[in-house]
Length: 358
Image 1 (cartoon, helix red, strand yellow):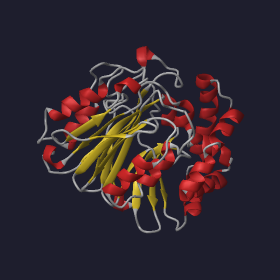
Image 2: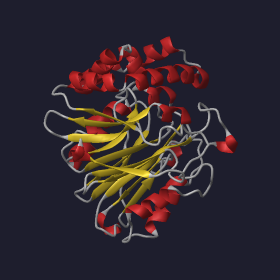
Image 3: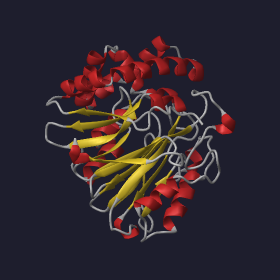
Image 4: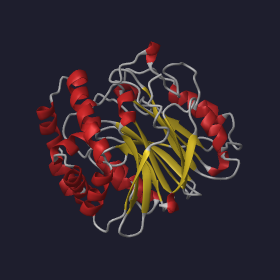
């Protein structure tokens, strides 16, 4: 098992300045060591796994700058502030925030879910995921809490130097995501997922969030599961040029790394069962689902090591080549609380956070 026993929970970064650049400066100052670690990690990883040397990675990442500057100047300004206060080049920060597009692994990457009131024992709405990735990123992953100028609070998980990869906000909205791989990927440049997720998490209502995720032009496929304390949830298979919406069944919705709407477009090389397995586990208890039950489902080892609770294969110790669950996450959209377990939930404990406490 690959883990850092000295770190049983993720570092929490809180930013609340009035403008985007200043919030970025707060972020970069607090997370500077982790950001520098993240940059050095990806210098090695991109070279080893993609044959992409850092100067070329920077050039590729900067191809996205015109899109994000035009569509999302606030988020772009925040990253400029991160670069300035962390002492890292802005081009390096852009690589970190386009790493999904640059690497785009055709394998397993996360299992997501939502539970609506009709399926919950306490009549609450939950959304979350097991975030699966290369073990190396656990060393520089963080939790980020952002208070916007209008008072909206956002909290979620990411890698240091990046915008949010998943999260919830004080309007009772939550978003989680997992990788997809399609035959339509990388035909042209678009808005990177990291930027789009951060914008979506600024939404005031479910319609706005849904419109943002479906409307943005994207270069590679990705999957987004959205939920709201309005007792609504849906899944958007973000296939370039033709996103497709999937809806809950019996108050439950789950997804992994395979395109369900158009399987003929799916080029993923991962095994197809985690999304189906989590759906089946949750549906068995529809109407009686609790947070404890969700956590047990997220610890499931059917198909080990490529299970919902994902582990390195065959004792593999190379942090760059194997896969594991980096974080197990549960967002309670009614109580505006989240519970996070660092790394495999079968081996750790969930820590609870309340959005209003920060």
